Image (cartoon, rainbow, N blue to C red; front, side, top):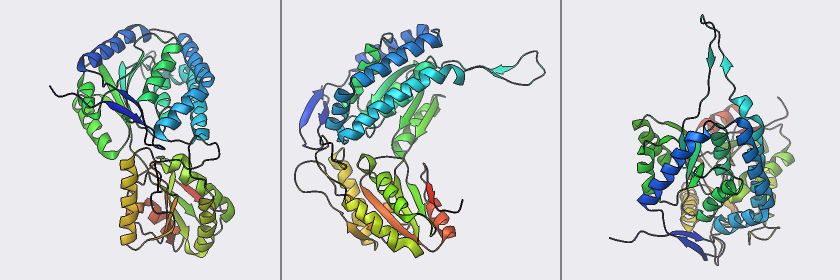
Length: 400
């Protein structure tokens, strides 16, 4: 029988192999799902006070271990250390938020009816499978786990395969806080194992943050089994700048909004839709800010742009830029990978972009900004809406 490939943790800044893990066997997955199901039988009956106490303990542990956990994030997926520390803090805040508010959120809701008493009651589903991405390897998991666990569910995690140390660290946080065994389990498995886990009758629901293709597959499999799903499938947020905007403030914010997490964020601004009358001025200010971004070792507290998380992702980004240039766009800054070790890609500004070009019509997951000139506010809205993607948008004007 052929051996299964190991799950590797590779430092994207140095290309060093940090660790290797044997993927969980079918028997180990079976055991984990059994533990989660058994834990649910008692966890569902625990009080909100009991759950809240444990959740707050986990938040304390996160803050106590902030330096260590942030170091794992930085080493494993290249997030600049200052941003990694902020991610850990955000996770602790998220746990405290649901510890404080879950009981109120889940209180029965009275409904008017002809019956003596009618209300909507919220009850736990069971074990929830989370398929989570690498770009916010702690936050994406804790923002799912906190409300799920506070609602009385148990959870199993299938994390992105390039962040196994982060995946293990999350389970360790819940275990150290005193959560009952099996309440939260990490499964070190490849993507091919997800289908059978979804189909398992002990899994009651599925959530995924990831690509449209992965989300479609998960939704189809969960739907076939009549299981609830929550999906978040990426974004290409428009950043609209009208002629009466504060251009200095807009440009400064635009740089931060695009290049956070080395541009690897679903909620980052990606398409900068600017009316022609102020396009050149905005472009100049934006370009100045981008050229000031410091690229380098993500462990350095002065670094603002680290490596991309994987080399294949860098290659895909490079291809999007190349295809856009072939369609008539121009590069004002960057546009290529950085020489040397590590999966670095220079902070890039592409101008003269049309909505049909790759950097505007596709989700761009890396440090590339697309600048799209438009005639007026009406065209700006039309161009902003010319995308199948969410997740948000911003409008810069002084006339609201």
